[in-house]
Length: 342
Image (cartoon, rainbow, N blue to C red; front, side, top):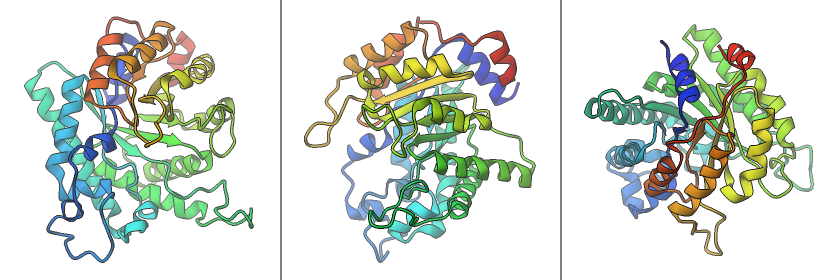
């Protein structure tokens, strides 16, 4: 049984847990500029504090420790620390050349964490999702209000950057690829294009693909202006094992969109909201119990197969959600939908 078959079986049997926020947990370590640099990059010419993806090279034990905390809290799927690990996003730190290395290292660290957990808990299944973020440049929108047709990056450049990231994640041992926090579907299409090109050129077995978009406000649209239905139609040709929503909104605000997606989707559904909306200081106040109560309501309605947390969530949030949904049946697919996924 390959990974996709395993996941399909698990998705149909129980609600799986994905982990919570990596950034929130990194912040707890209060790393200094020196902490980010480590010995290898102590003389790097630009500031590196805030480059969380670099920590897989300079502070691997911290990243592995966070993965283990999420595994201990009940996560079935943990995400690699690679949200911004593309050459385009890393250009902010003049670290474009390290993109592939970072992705390999991040996947290996997460894989080690899952393997150690499964060795300590025989009979459990834990998976590594290679996190592919939205990128800090967008193909659908101009960064110059005076020139709507201007783009700071091309489709080919975005696709090439994603190809490199995918290569690193696969080579590092990721079990799943997770295209997440999509606010511009054209960027996501570039990632899907890169993914298809990668499999075509390497001949490697396809990994299960999870796709997760983000609704940015009460309009119910992505940042690039698509409705949820338009977003769904735009990416389903990639044949993901699941589609879902994460980030931007808390669970309470996400509710109508998860309900809509559950009505639309011919695949499994994921949902990992923020811990509420940020306060005036940009921090998240929603307690684990509050988040768990909201997400459990989605489960009770039969809308979800995978749940977890995004910004502001911690292992305590994941543990509370896991306990709240453990006895609730997952969203069921129709027989013909399961056949289409097979």
